Length: 212
Image (cartoon, rainbow, N blue to C red; front, side, top):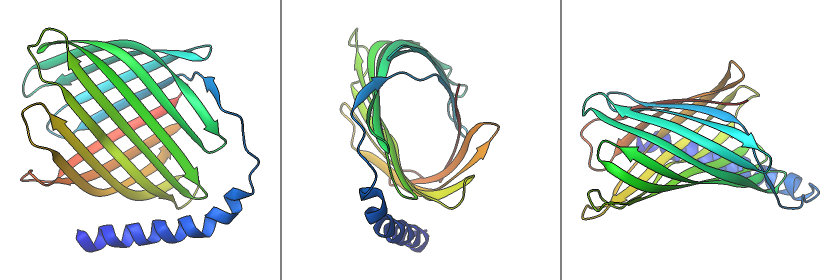
């Protein structure tokens, strides 16, 4: 696993260096706020299923999400809004502020999703913060996942995915593993195998996302 990850990082680094000069010649684009509509389905094998949908409202977005874990009977509904700040032709950051009503209590959540591309290399991340309303839950923060990928073709990307999470009164947890994404049905299907420092078995994670 270590050798495979090291090889993937080397390939991405070489491609990144080769494309820096070409992208530097791209004319800059003025930052602006913009909305987008999308659907996202995320599944952690043997753990949780999450479905999110966003509707564009001018430069903003309305967000609705449902999260469930059959093993623990956990359920959550998420409603909020946000926007995307386009920083250039190849970079941007999307942010959402939402309320969550869950079986473990109500909370306020913030999501930050930066992404950037340099030639054939893409870097993206999903950061999340959770603040309980009633004191019954724990404050939590995570980056899950952060992905560095190399575009092999118009339909295939391969790379490395990492996760970092911390909860109140708990130690930091982290993991890393290979990832692959393919263009399917007008969107992208991605698969990741994450090996956590504190986990006994690798985690298989899948996701489908598409702009509407």
